Structures are given as structure tokens and as C-alpha cells.
Length: 170
Image (cartoon, rainbow, N blue to C red):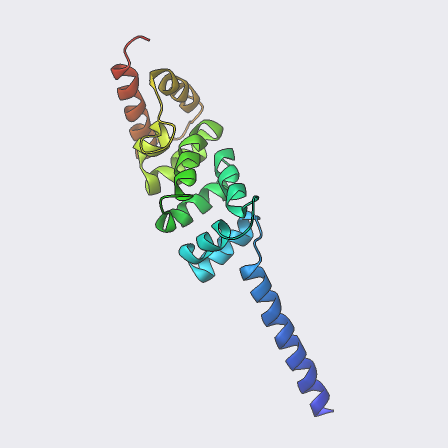
């Protein structure tokens, strides 16, 4: 009887280890699962896993699309991946971070500015798509929906006002 219990315990242990391994290394594009993997394995390991060797449809593309959507869970991932970003495809994340402000201004201001800075998040400086004066006016209008008061929001408005001022009346 004791051997039966030990055998069941061993099978349960092996199954648990296999399940955890599967969850950690399977290229899931669920933001909760990716964030859990980042916490366990670190951002560089997970970043490398998402950007490597998956053919035409990289899981990284789904992460970038999620960040562009402005959904807070994806924005939290953008912050978690910041230490791991390299030239490419890290550049795609930087551009997505800059685009997130128009999709969800309150979350982008709260979550992204402390990690990436107002110049990038608000004005796209350093991204593949920097904001011009017309874009800055549009982003300022989008920020009107943000009812919180914060240092980050003030920085964002200041950066955009500078761009509008530099662009003149056009």
C-alpha cells in the first residue's frame, strides 16, 4: 500500500513539473502567462523566446499589437520587457509604446511614462514614428480625457506643448 502512494505521489510530481515547464516555455501570447514567465525566467529569456524561431507569425508580434491596443495588462508587459529590448525587434516595442497613448491615455501615462519617459510615450521621440505638431495637438486633445493629476501627465502635456509651439500654427 505504501508503494502505491509513493507511486501516485511520484506521478503527480512529474505531472506537476511537466505542467509548469509547459506553461513556462510554451509560446503563449496570453499577457498573464507571459508576465508570469517574465517573473520566473526574467525578461531577457522570455523576450528571446518570443522573438526567435517561430516562422512568419512570431509571438512577439502579438505582444506588440497588445501594447499598441493600450490594454493595461499589455502595457505592464511593455514595462517588464524594457530591460531586455535590443535593436530589433525591440524597436517595434518602442514604437508600440509611443502609439499606446492614443489608444488608452490614462493607462499609458500611468504605466509607461515612469519606465520609458514622457519624450517617448507622449511624443514618440526615439521611435520609428515621432509626433509632429498636428499629432501633438491630437494627443493633447486625447489627454483631455485623463482626469487624474500626476507628475507624468504634466510632463506629457509639457512635451506635447513644446512640439506644438515648435511647429507653429500649422
